Image (cartoon, rainbow, N blue to C red; front, side, top):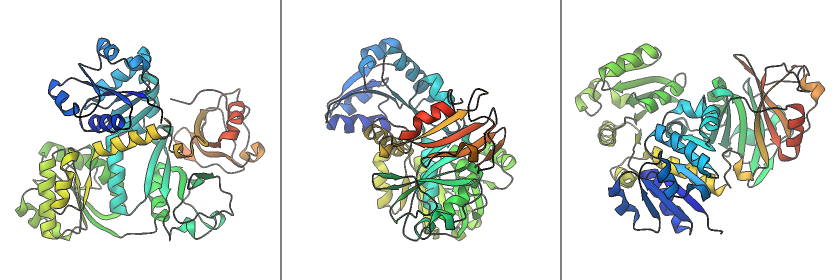
Length: 451
């Protein structure tokens, strides 16, 4: 394997593991870090260390970002990561990855951030962690998520187990939820653009395009392990706890959040009247008993404090809660949690590290069809007056197999078009296109992707 050159900004959990793994694979790695005491931690493997702030040009020049294959801004500061990405690109870095914490940046505003800050991939630790937790609680098999049209549309890669409906019937015999569409199957390394007569095999992955509001129905339909979700108790009403709680509304019989900060608890109660919010300390056994936490089917400790999460989970297990999930920041202590009986530990930093590793190994493709080495693309276009597709129905366009108009966003309305639907100037269209049809996209839908 040809040796490459990488620059990593931030020697925390994500940066440390990236630097160690890439250096062990024979690549040249430089770490930029403000804390001089972290130099000792990385000296055990062969990497260069530049002491300083990655948002300062002299520091980036000292790390020679101008000739690196990939600049990874993975420090604990979102603002510093975004600023460093702009500077690194300006100085000549081929590609940049930017880690952010908050989900909204990577969902609703992802394309704006990628364009303005020069990021080739923007990943949110909050999105990664929330997806993993929901997979576990709901029995889903989501492998990756792509947010399109400012979060109104999602593209999900879902693993299909034996018993999933897509492995039992051909597509024409399946009534998909309104606003969803199966656009591809992955059979090993083979990408299949299905017709109505096609049926997936157990072990395949399905790529499904759908409106965000129907994704829960799609996930339940695809799962071979339908679960009845009773009461879910979430300890911690921060960003991750809030995201998970929102996703569980309508799926769990009851969702309860216990937040120790009184002001935060009040804000959550006002913002989400569909949730049951309690102010209290989840490390207080008397409180857990009084609130009958033992009756819950799942207990999720999602605060920003590892020790609080550890204690809360141990108490919930002592009370007999069957499913316990803990959010941890320090990945090196995860094995200790498991020894203490915690069956499921989610580390956002570990998930970010794994996602960046996948990005590197895929040949730097941030799209979730990257495992097929660019065999297909997901493209967004806003219809201009000069577009040949403007004013044309889908039937009149007659797109070939492998050219799918998957969704249309018209103002606040999102729909999956059928033959009689006519495309209008100003529409944002989301296309799933096999590589051989990419030139056709440029002819029918000229212009840039919408921000």
